[in-house]
Image (cartoon, rainbow, N blue to C red; front, side):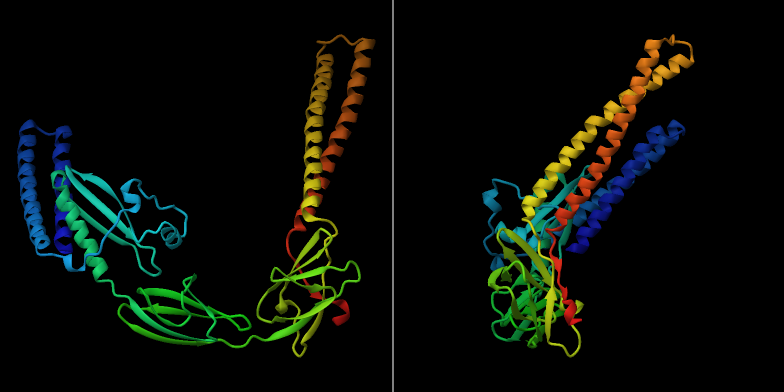
Length: 411
């Protein structure tokens, strides 16, 4: 049926082109006799195309009458009983969005007019990992909307029916490992699951083991047997020594011990540690690749702890920054006004528009002095704002996790 649908669509487009050509004759610079002649010829071609379109439609109707999916039909429910149209977000995780809304598939499309015929194109999106979007199209007379809908439904059902998943039989060690398929956690780490044709990423992780991953290039209808055995992760012993202050240590967001302390961390992973004393917290990342040396298994690390609560420090610096900016904005227009008045007086005196008297000279000197003073103040406030901005950025930088390095005595 897709061949007949494509043929009918091509005929409808050709008919549209003929109609456009016929309509252009009304503005053509030719004799009236020639216009009538060419119009008649085009009308004849248009009628022939319409007859071919009708024959193609009859063939499609015949095929539709012989097509039945009754034995394989499952109940289909419209989202929210059809009371609301679902809109697929432009920038969103489609599988997660559909899963959250309990939607199996979304069909959306457009309707265009092709010289009196209706052209409908639709896209079927399932959001299933690896399953592509399916695109379908159909065209027909407006009064044949039911036939167009039936044809689209048949195309959709045929495409879904012919979609053959691949079977994957998976075995993992250790048994309590977590398995992620295309960033989605599988319900069971071992067993059989199905994927659709295309590229898929399988990730296996477990505590105390190095993670492993594999890309599967799946082909429809194929069976795949996978066995993934994770290797025990290598570890090193690290510790921090702080003479002041004594801090609580949180490892993986959970309380671990006080300082000083020593613990094992994996060599192939980044570990997050936080230190807390009073109300001050410092977040630290341990990247073994930055300090590990061959043959060494124990390390003493160092890091400078924050001295003040990050939120309190940032709030104070922000307030000072805003006041500094406000003072600068208040002084700047005053300086510009004084500069303008002083320049206008000097210009007026030079052009003999202002009589220079002792009072005028005194006023001018006062304005110059005020302009210099306010100018210096404005520059100072501008420098102060730049300094406060730097201090604010430095305070904000305190919220970024710090990098631990090897203690100097261990180098």
